[in-house]
Image (cartoon, rainbow, N blue to C red; front, side):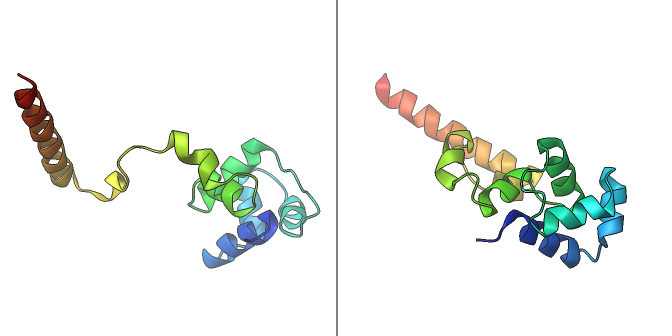
Length: 112
């Protein structure tokens, strides 16, 4: 598991951004980004974490998971019951909904 600062640094470097570019994008100094990445700023604000995550193109929860602040079990109550729906096209979502509707129709027909 990566430390918070290591995770942010890795994500930033993978996108080819400098500390200055990231800082400019979210409205904080490059020296503040450096402190976060080096672990000198242990608890950046939630607002800054969200801005960093958005700029680096990942969900803020990924920061919290990878940094060990939360676990998958902590997120379980907030997960949708069907996974990977975001990966479906609009047409595939229509088919999935039709299948769910059919299953409900069959169940209701058996109850009558």
